[in-house]
Image (tube, rainbow, N blue to C red; front, top):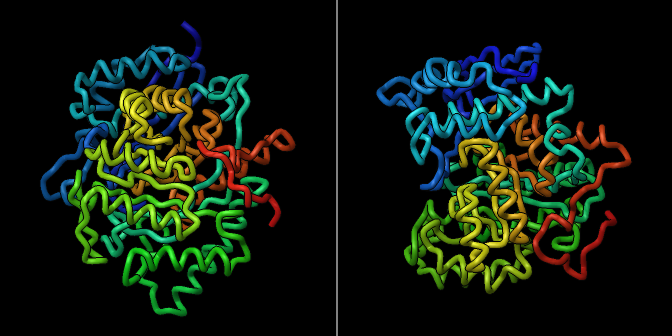
Length: 436
């Protein structure tokens, strides 16, 4: 055994960005190294996700996590005592086997992912390395392209608009720092446009504007105007990324856009989104069809995958097997990687590697219920994911992650390579430029 053995593991209840209980795990190793991590929680979830264990009943609306905390302290802690923290795969196998269910429902996905991440942090601390470098080893890395929410909708904003996220990406920026500078100007311009039009309605779960638009397409129009008002060229420098989260308003062949008062079958939804791609500077669309609409995902990717990143989130649920099927059938060309969706760090990495092997774009993602935990920032760099999605450009649980990548970029100095256009699974358009 090495000195990086687990001496003590402890779980506690803490609070997430929505003021809901969640699980934090702290790990101390025999060499004195400490790791700590907090489980996030999603509002829009896929049916194949690892399940959070909640207490039910009336306390905190049934969302308390005392059972999950007991899972950590009563079962996980004794099972992991004296195990080598540097062997992440073995730790995660033990967690999966100890739970014994396919959905992590017995011990709780929240208890398991917080433990998995905390052990990872402890191992990096034991090696006296920043987490991203501990993950990367000798492999080269890129600083990820940030995907940043400007308007929130769907389950993140009480369904004020049907589409869940209206985001910007800045692939023509020359660095992560510059991409954040550009986004800050776009966010400010969007706010000005909304205030002038009387369309502001508050702040969504992930920090974006909670809009009072009259249609889903009005959000696209406003966001395009904001890009231009901030002084950037749509498509050539800055693009739009959408999280449709179609499972939230329909399933195979039956979709209803409440804001637009429209009912669509699969073909009509694909046609509508295709027109949006033609009319607006859209570079990525996440979950354009429902998670059970495999044929629709195949058709959408066939028609638009050569000029748009088609991302599977609820559809792929950070599952390597699902990624392989989607790749074989041409049902997506990018995968969102959420550690708590998979259950453990090892399973999330396996899904990312499956995406990379298929030539997919890979995006490490936070959740709508977040905390000051910055694990995903380090995963996005250390795994060379190429892209990072953590929400908007406000609220400290979001900014903590953006700021952490800034520090990593600064630490790399002249060796820092920003992914930019290379993050996408399609070629940059002829109009693409890197000048501001």
